[in-house]
Image 1 (cartoon, rainbow, N blue to C red):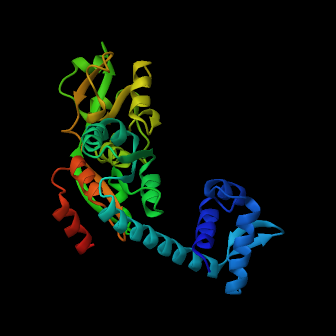
Image 2 (cartoon, rainbow, N blue to C red; image 1 turned 90 degrees about the vertical axis):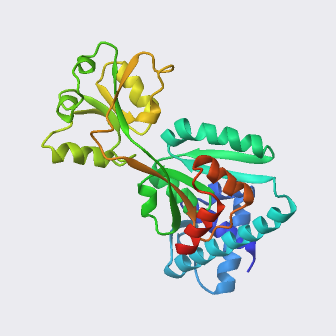
Length: 307
């Protein structure tokens, strides 16, 4: 049994059993991947994948157990490399952050700028996705740190730390009647079509629940996971926008007026998620502190110990 064989079966599983795509991701040939999987199965005297002719169509029961073990082995190998790099090349390496659009667009830039000035030799990559995609990227080891609102804290495989709280605002085009109808209430918002986040995203289900609890039906004209998309369609006149307050910028959004809605909804919490078995490099601690200054090294280590 060889480590590259474990990498091959993991990548094939990640790529939906498509050996060709897995081979491309591994920078090798499809026949080579197929051959190594066959050799591993012969050594173990069992099938890892179900087949229909030459095509892989599923994962066997023992194959599922082997894939879980392979994931742990490969992750620990990566941790071992990180230990070596930490003491021999402490200011160089890679850092992959997975974040939702709103966090990546409006909260991360300042932290990224601070981090890159302190660690110019670290290659930083940011992957965007919805909270589920962010969490799963961290779980699979495709990202080192995940940043998303609330849903990420439901994943037991991750250590999650609260970073900051935020609330919502309403945006409307200049001249919209809602802007002159103070004070802002749920009833007044409900009179107009609303453009907001998808209800599975960024606390959207909570927003819907608040309206329901007050006996109101939210008239949703359009939903999106991207704050900029929401603002674009509000500018086009599809409705008033309900979005994260951090997503409104008076200089960029000159055609829109913002009304504070924080008195109408509970605050939402953005969490940072890291695999429970992760080995954190020194610069990763510093990135976390750049995002949330209260999460210093001692606080992060304490969270891991209590997880």
